[in-house]
Image 1 (cartoon, rainbow, N blue to C red):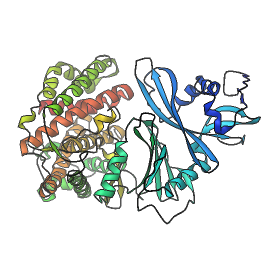
Image 2 (cartoon, rainbow, N blue to C red):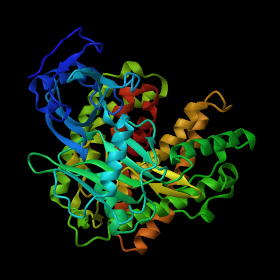
Image 3 (tube, helix red, strand yellow):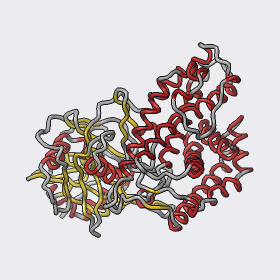
Image 4 (cartoon, rainbow, N blue to C red):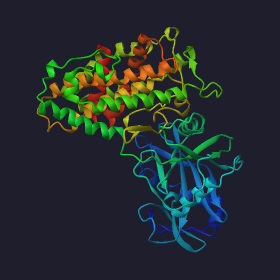
Length: 543
């Protein structure tokens, strides 16, 4: 039986229960209190909460399970967040009870008294004892775990013991814990009724294909829900020592490139151009361009192209496991693709029509061009004739950009295979042309170039118009050098990415899709940057 004393409606309230911690989740009164405004207020403040743009209606406890070892018990909660817009999302929240008043002062969920012991319910990840328990459960995982919470480990995760743990840093959708400065356990906060693609891809590439340029798979935590579906809540991988991600690296290098315009007195108007989507070796790049840009970026792009090709070759070399076996284009894929893109396109049209007041100058000009040519863009998406495509579809990264790539020395490591955040879990697992990843990376190149200009506009002496002209020249050469390595490498491995015109069609199609996708984010989050996807869209539809 529970007794409840409410002092006030805020976090200084005290809720008292006579139940033991081990049985507290069976108390309906506790669940009612816990799922009230207290938990709602806590969740909306978390970085990993993805529903900030929508209006929360209520939270339900979909289910709970114990995360325990011997007599040490924590709870894992699957929370169903319902929104007034008639959809819902699921989140994973592990909880612990602490009685130390000085602990986790900034991350308390609920003040509570359990069997007359005052304390707080907190997110268990804040507690080292919980992090240690999870590490030990993974380390001692049995080969075929049939329990509700299933711990799995690879053969690589052995001969070690818990030493220490810490948070990796700020993340948007997940929480990562670093163990012993050697391993990283990613807790998925937003979860789906299926195995997470990041788990599937990491395990496949690391264990089955021995792909070295992604963090090695070490283990995972799955739960089997009440309907018997496996849900991934944790992924353990090796920690890759690195010098940061490729996005920050490119921003730094590109700043030097744009500074060279003045330092080397480069005549932008006379810079030689190259064929769009051509294939270039570094020796094909004109001396004028090398003098301006230098060799370093181009050699790095070649290495990144090689690693990208090797990733796709590994993903396209499976013929036993159905989830990864290559397949051809067909009518079902085409219907799925068009429906998805036309829905997204209409959404972006509505957004841009309601956001024109946020734009000015070239951005407003490009936005009006987007609206004027909306039927042309729509036709581009509809014009997907699968009968003319001879290439193959494979499982791909799905959200491939410079921020998903770590730099280690002169090499690159690819990570985060969860897929596009707006996509459903099933859509993320649909086999796509590998060039979709390449298109995502090309859009990231475009972003890095223009972000460099925007971030340093006051530093550069050239006009915005001249900088943009130089930007487009540089962009074409980066794409050309990437394709020069990537195309040859995948073709040597007999990964079928189609004939030349097919490849160009797929790249343009996927880059247009990606730019339209980006446009919604920029208009909602940072309208000043909407010019970047708008420029990308303009380039594609006018070329």
